Amino acid sequence: MSSLLFQTQSFLVVGLLIYGVTKRKHKFLHMKIMKTAILWDLLLVAQIELTRSAIEKASKVTSNAMILNIHVSLAISTVLLYFIVYYFGNKLAKGDESVRKYHKPIGILTLTVRIATLITSNLI
Ligand code: HEM
Image (cartoon, rainbow, N blue to C red; front, side, top):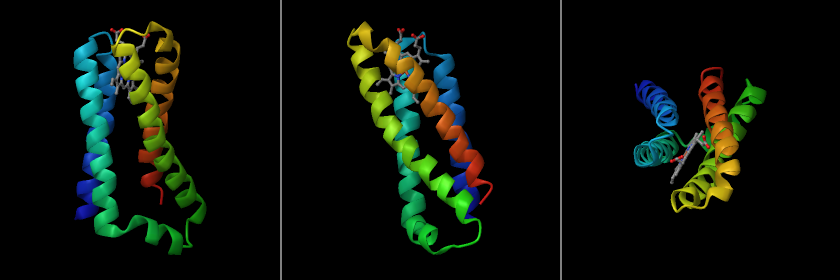
């Protein structure tokens, strides 16, 4: 039951991130959507961790160990990338156009890694 709840939230977060990217030309709307999606995703990680102790499970399970390791690595990378994309996004919002060349590729990478996290979560 809780697994379905997590999966549904995960799909919605990815959907919200994609929607937010389509609104990238609308500065304030883009920022609001991305901040909401990132916060929601971090809360989702907390929910999973608190109810299923994912890290403990990850360290004990031996079947599908490889895909599990890939999934956990992707999930951790997503969180790190969120901080980086947020940092450059805030600078861009303050008018520092020099970081646009970083925010754009890192944003695309973040979304790609997040989608890969979703896909691998279904393969474990
Ligand atoms: C996964 C999260 C995010 C992704 C995938 C993403 C992606 C993008 C992309 C592709 C652009 C267009 C860049 C261009 O065409 O030059 C953009 C613009 C922008 N983003 Fe993000 N972004 C994310 C999060 C954020 C966050 C958290 C903030 C603010 C805190 C932010 C602030 C901005 C700003 C200010 C712009 C420029 C809008 C404009 O041109 O008026 N982004 N973003």
